[in-house]
Image (tube, rainbow, N blue to C red; front, side, top):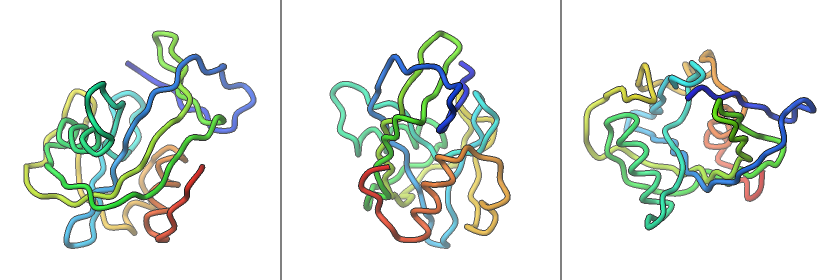
Length: 155
């Protein structure tokens, strides 16, 4: 389902839902980071998605990464929390979701790169290559926070 991201946009629609979610910065032994090109907006992004009932945040990040990229991971830390009320996602079905995402840090432990119904491409990138990729501001912020080593508590 297509989505539109709004960040600090006075013309953004009012949110009508709040859904806990996890995203994951997956870093290989060679320092490259795992990204997917999303089907809903065509942008490069971290793997991640909504948390389901009965699972922990860690389990959510592991499941979403496997589903969206084919890579099995272990969670090794946290990059930060991202809960800005000024960042909303508007979906075609009328849902307008306020951001509520915890970004985890992970490392690959197996699997093979695979696209899913949520991605058109999945690939590993050096941090320098990431700078030239099209992505929404909130994903770039998470990657920059990871690279800087800062752990933002509230964003």
